[in-house]
Image (cartoon, rainbow, N blue to C red; front, side, top):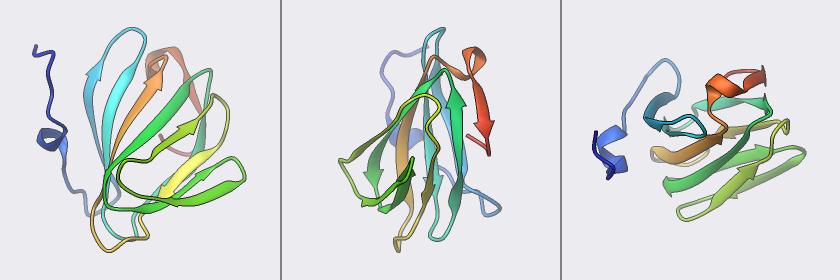
Length: 116
C-alpha cells in the first residue's frame, strides 16, 4: 500500500448516478472521491455519529448542508457535522470532482437518510 495517493487516479464516470471510489479506509476515517457529471446529484442524506467534509477539486456545484445552500468551486471545503443533512447537485457545465472524508468511517457510523 502506498501512503501517497493522487486523486486523479480515482476519478471516474457512472452514467447512471454519480461515481464513488474509496481512496483509503482506516479504523477512524474513510477518504473517498465523488465525481458528478453535469446535472447528477448526491441525494440529501445524513450520517449518524460521523462528520463529513467535501473538498472541491474541480468543477462547481450546489451544496446543501442543513438549511443552507451554496454554490462551491475549486478550493472550497464544505463541512457537514454528524447528523446534519447534506447533498450535492452538479449545476456546472463540467465534471464536479470532490474529495470526501467521513470520520469515523462508515463501519462505525450509519446513514440516516438517502445514500452517502
